[in-house]
Amino acid sequence: MNQNLRYSPLIFLSLFFITFVGCKTTRVATSAKLSGLSAKSAKFRFVGRVDSSATDYVRIFWPGTAIHLHYTGRDAKVELKDQKGENYLNVVVDHGEPSVIKLDSLKHWYELTTDLPKGEHTISIYKRTEWDHGSTDVYGFQVNGDFLEAPKSSGRVIEFFGNSITTGYANQDYSGKDQPDGMKTNNYTAYSAMTARALDADMICTAKGGIGILVSWFPLIMPEMYNRLDPEDPKSVWDFTKVTPDIVVVNLFQNDSWLTQKPDYVEFKSRFGDTAPTEKEIIQAYQSFLKQLRSVYPNTPILCTLGSMDATKEGSPWPGYIESAVRAMDDERIDTLFFPYKGTAGHPHPEDHRKMADLLVGKIRLILGW
Image (cartoon, rainbow, N blue to C red):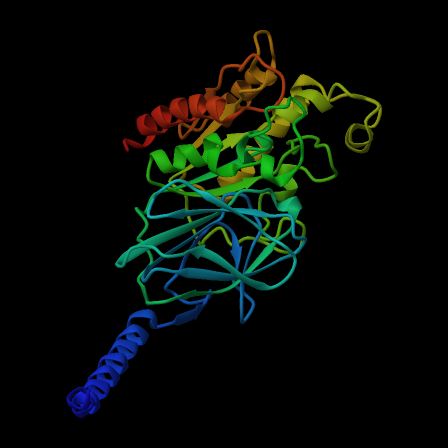
């Protein structure tokens, strides 16, 4: 017994040393460099019509608006404040399947990734919802590592001018009710976004459900909105010189095809009084909008599309109106493509959008040689 006691100080010293070293090693392993940057940093690449005029945030409005970042580390967060608390974002990590963030109207941090393997990672954030759900302010990002240069663009850009089909409105609502809930709308699975990804192009989505060229389900029409930065502010004008798309895709007239047949509707009366527009007036309205686009994009190919809802069903005159307007433009850089009527009620679902995207991708490859 006494012999054992004689060696106990060495034992205690060894145990203390092992414990101390072990604790120190654990602290080093669990602690990690924490880096934060303002959203206005050049390390982040925003795609779409965004307002960066504020000193401490970047404001986004339009469906499909994207933010790309590249970093080393396991975890990443973003600080956001949503105007109404109604928006949804898709988060794509390392080109995987999207996860969804539902925003609220408070300013706070949202987790983008947790416990990823060590190494480099990319994150892309996409706005699922339309601008009537409000704007979102992006304040900054935080990672437990280092920010790297944002993923580079291919240099290709497609701009879409469209309605609910282009935004992907209610495309995930299989109830047949076309519910307005933001979770049922996913621009990421709309033909517009599918086409852009298939062609490795950035997308600008200047679109709103319910909008038309002559008349909409609300007071605003596309010729009055096409040049806005903040879609709800008529004084907020987009600078078209910031980005010149490789091609412009127009998918409008679906709402016009309905509303020009509703003389009792308030917007019909507001736009036309008691008399529906003639075929000549319809064609001239479409041609006038093409002239607006040509004034801001003098050399960009324009592809005029329609569908895949009932404006392209058999016997519909609306594809013919577009063809007449395009012929009248006498512009070899303007072409047409009509998506076949999907044959069912309600808005297109992702599988319908996929068919549209396949046709559109093929047409754009022919036009641009991509």
